[in-house]
Length: 497
Image 1 (cartoon, rainbow, N blue to C red):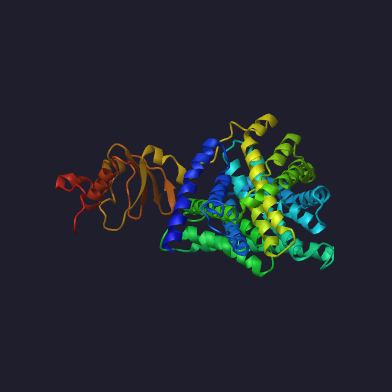
Image 2 (cartoon, rainbow, N blue to C red; image 1 turned 45 degrees about the vertical axis):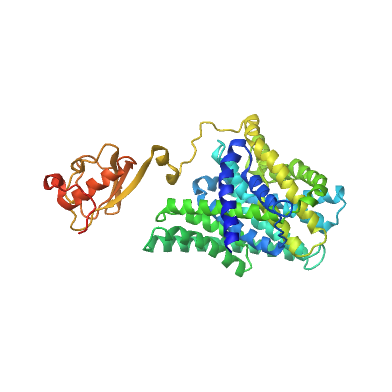
């Protein structure tokens, strides 16, 4: 166990450091994580990992966290106008992409219909982690970004259903086609409904729950998204769609400690991405990947040049999306961990040819993620879909307090405190510390020098690192002896009362 913990800690720390390196080099971080997994595997350090079923299970768990983070950070104001086109891309687009890729590889690679359609189904889903990580570094119109992010959050569900159906049932066998269509429609509709109900119920509960620690709210919020997946799976509905819908409902609610929830979900999503990509890299066998190079390039060209543009054309044209936006949507349909995870489904089901499918998808994802992810910015400029004046979203927990070397302090005015009745300017905080907000009777306001503190007030104070200790001592002194604390030789030093 100690050795496993040591290796795990080293991998996580190296992966975290690699994020900065990949950003500087302009490489998608998922490629770095996959490379770490390959380096640890049979051709590197010699770790022999071939547990396909465990990879599939852990991969699905990681996708739950990644999709939940995407839903929690999605803004309903930007999502609502693009809901129609995103939903169409995630359903009709997935079907069209699967069919086109399936036909292409059937004709070119001479595969049987079941395996050919599996190629199409596995590659039909854009990757939420790759899309979120790449697009949020670019300045693009909010509508375009929201369309791609919503599509990537929703299209996992139809893709998973298609892959499961094709892996378990041969083409032309099992139930009639209309029965399978009804099953898929039920699973998507039920998954969306379950996710909405869990989100609404969780929103109601978190608003009214008086949890003893602020750190419990992020755990509860993420737990609710996992509950949505589990409830959907138990009801034979789409758990992935339930996760995304529940995340959107919770993320757009006025929840207590909302920024802490988003920060926690972001950290979990990063951890899930690191673990997932490293695990997939471990599962890959570099000795076999050379044979998959040509089929991967052929399949990738069919996907990028035929399937994706056609699926965008069919899905976006009814919503009057312009040609330049459609071209960017076609190029920005990034594939990442999701297709590789989906490729483990037929592999674990023992489908003939599934090993080659996994290798082809792995090579395809590496090559085309490198090509597409590295060229999104210049393609956006060529197509003139950039928005250089568009403000980038700033999260509170990533505000520049670190660069300013400042801390955010919170102070309560309890019963018996001499702070009650003191005017703000009488606190005489050192230069570099200031009261920025006062919360009184549930209402926040920016105080002025003549604001008089009352019992029950909650103060937010920003203090630079150099004066934080002095500010805390001054506040303790005033709370003990009032505004004339220094006259009583009270300087707020720690003491035993």
